[in-house]
Structure formats: C-alpha cells, structure tokens
Length: 476
Ligand code: SAM
Ligand code: SF4
Image (cartoon, rainbow, N blue to C red):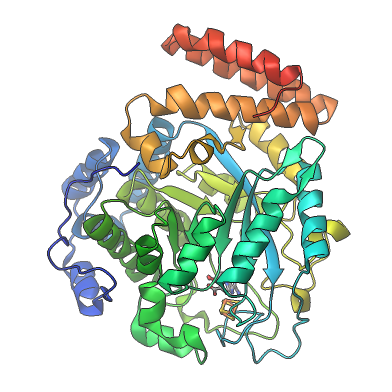
C-alpha cells in the first residue's frame, strides 16, 4: 500500500535514478541557518505536530549550540517517540553470510586489501545451522549481510533468503529477512524481491563526494553515483521497503544528517514514499584499519544527531545497532529509536559456535559494543517497561512501509502494533524465556492491556482471546 505525501520542495528538480546530492546546496543551508530560541522552539513544535521538517528547519536544530535548547531538542525527540511509537522496540539480529569483498573501503575489516581477514562464505549447511541457532534463541527477524563479490550475486542472495525462510526448528521460524548488501541492477533487485525479502538496506556511508573518494579506493563501490542511485533501482524493481544510512565518522556529522534528509526528500519526490528506516552507524575499530579521527563523532553529538533525525522524519523507523555500548544504547533508545539488534554476533558462523564474549577482529567486520545475549537485552527492556516486539504482521499481511503506517494512519498503533507486539512477546515468553523473565513479561503485558483497556476497551476482548491461544500453543 503506497501512501501519498505532500509534495516536497524537490519534486520538480528530481528525476528518477539521477544523482541528486548537491554539496554546495547542503553547505549553504547549513551556513545560512541562524538558530534563535524562537525559531528552534517553533521547529520542535512543528515536529511534535507530526510534520516532516525541511532541510532548512533541520539545519536550525543542527546549528543549535545553546545547551538549554539542545536539552529541549532531546526532550522533543523523547516526546515524539512516546507520541508516535509508544514503547515498542522491534528486535532483530544480523547474520553475516559471506565476507569476501572486492572493494577497498578503508574503514572496513572485509576490504580486499586486508590479508589478515579470514574469508568465509557460509555454505547451505552452515547457513541452516546459523538460522537454527538464532531460532532456538527466539529470533524472528534477521538482516542478512554480505561483502561485495561476484559470488554474492542476486541469485546467491535470493537463494540464501529462501534457505533462511525454509529452516523451521520447534516453534521457531524466521518471519522477516532483510538484506544489507551491495546495490544491484534492476534485474538483480527483481530476483531478490521474488525471494520475499523485507527491507533492502544500502548505506551511502558519506554523502560528500570528495570524502567518499578518499575512503572508497577501488572496486564497484568507489562509484559514488552507482551507490547513491542503488535504492532507486530497487524502487524501480518494486522493492518499496528500503533502508538508508550514513557511516558517521567519515565526514562532518551535520552535513551527513542533511544528506540523509536530502535522500528522504528524493524518495518522497520520486516515489511518494520515504525510506522505511534510517541507520546511523558510527565507525568502530576494524581489523588492520585506522581512521582519521578528524570527523570522529562524540557520544554527546551522537545523541544529538539521533534526536534531530527523530524530529526531522517523525514517521521513519530509526535503527540503532550493537556497534554501540549497552549504556549508550539505553540513552539513545529513549530518543526515538524503533528497532535494535539483540544477541548480536557478527563472526561468520558465530551463532552456531555460541561464542558471544570473545571478539576476533580478523574474523569479523568491526568491533561491537554490546555483546549481550537476546535474553539479557529482553530482560533489560522489560525492566525499563519497553515492549520488545518480534512483530512481522504488517509484512506478512502485505502492508509495506509499516513504520509509515504506524505514524500516518490514525489509531494504527493501537489497532495493530501494540497488539501484535504483545502477542509476539507472549510467544517469546512461552517458548524461550526463563521463569523469572516470563513472570516479568506477563506483568508488563498486563500493564499494557490495562492501558489499552482505558483507551479502547472494545479491542481488549479479542486480544485476550488471542493471548489465550498463544498460551495454548497456537503461533502466528
Ligand atoms: N558490503 C556491503 C556494503 O558495503 O554495502 C554490505 C554491508 S557492509 C558489510 C555493512 C555496513 O557496515 C557498511 O555499509 C558500513 O556502513 C558499515 N561498516 C563498515 N565498516 C565499519 C566499521 N569499521 N565500523 C562500523 N560500521 C562499519
Ligand atoms: Fe566490502 Fe562492504 Fe566492507 Fe566495503 S563496507 S569493504 S563493500 S564489506
């Protein structure tokens, strides 16, 4: 289902599949932004009324240095999260399928010139074993990750997606498979779509051409425009759930936030639908790699940038990964993150080895900051009264753009999301939780049902009925 957005300022300028980033335009917007108490507060209010911000308005937030106003921006993001997304946090896990790579991205442990990296491509048996381990843990949503290599063509990616869906163990099954891989041509995207993928994610890394050239030394990925227009080709292949991202630490973070926003504008202008998710990875240590610290993003700035992104695009899902530490994740989740990975292990074959503690940089892409198990993350979310969700109902019912729907369709969250989150949490509690966690989880479910009851008592009876079915062993 495609939703209609108000035309943005770029409708006339953009043509599909044409590069659309103009560095001087972004710098001019940043250079001319003059934040005052009045205009910054007005922009926050505009966002709290669930309106998309323009690049000029977002630049006012980015240029704000007054500590009091920065606190107001963060408070605005927290309020917006509560208003739009409630306390659900969608859980997923990354699964690395192969780390061969022909590109040379200087920040990445998988780059072709890194002879220290142990190269592995999971064969079908190994892939099945990884998926089984993930299912045995309670995971329902995966993102498959690949290096860029002729071996990992569209057919290979589609085959691995089909393999993942086919693994069923006990009550476990993977219900949504997303992809993080190199951009394909339109035909390739069509092949991958046929395998019923969820979201196709491609991060631009940096929206600044010159900086991009400095970090992407060779291989197909060194072509800035091929990368930039990758998700347009996905759209042409009718993959309308796409995820964008920038790798923070390569170039000026304020510039990158506007680059991301410009990318959102482009999608809205050309396809009438924004990206499904935005990711904002920060550079982490990687095997045999050193990064110029000139653009390093501090924790404080990272927190600010997530808050600003939340306000700028109120309807888009924000993904926070285990690259960040437990402590920072706790802080940033409050500001409007809607999805996190949990129980993450990015070593090739790492889930079957059940090796969560020890990280070996020569066997993985970069160092992660949060190595907790899925159970530990769920425990903490429950303690903080978040509702961990393994929900895939929208996708399974053909409702694409789930985050946009949550935001835009009145009552959607109450009608679908909260209920599906409760039911998928109950499935997890029944099938995977410890007795203590089960008790805690059902207590939270009772609280959430009581809240629903106050808002819309008619919805509660059918929900309780479905909950009883879950307890009796019925699964989605
Ligand atoms: N090879 C494909 C590509 O480059 O698009 C697939 C994804 S790559 C394995 C996943 C993402 O990891 C990259 O897009 C990049 O943003 C991020 N990444 C690479 N090196 C990193 C590092 N040292 N720290 C944090 N993130 C990193
Ligand atoms: Fe290869 Fe992706 Fe790493 Fe670049 S970021 S070296 S393309 S795996």
